[in-house]
Image 1: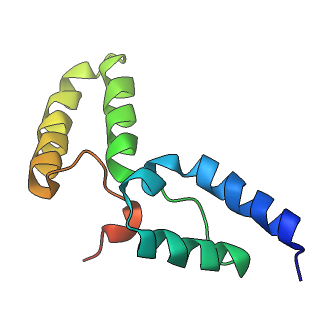
Image 2 (image 1 turned 90 degrees about the horizontal axis):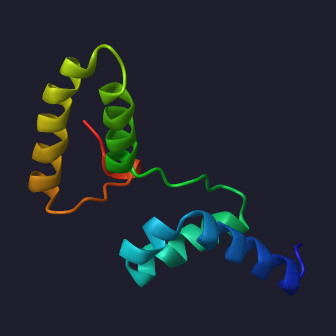
Image 3 (image 1 turned 180 degrees about the horizontal axis):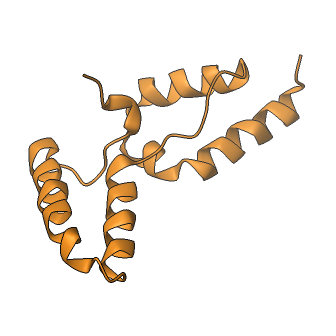
Amino acid sequence: MIGLPSLLKVYRDWISDNDTFVRRASAFEIRDKLVAVKEGQVSEVIDFLAFCKGFIDTKKKTPEASSAKPLVTVYNSLVDYFRSDYLPITEINY
């Protein structure tokens, strides 16, 4: 079993690495993630819209910059639909 000081460091590290998720999640969601961290079952929470934004920005700097325009439309549609610029990848399903 992990000692309390070590466990607190693990929690702090996870919170620091996932600050976007922590700022937008409920207390219950954070609790569930920290329990999963303690059990070694959690991975990084990926913000899908931030990933999309980075991909689009990179695409705009290439010779295929014109192909970024439809992607911007999709990105904006997702932001409008979810009424947020944050979408954890775990919330996407079929």
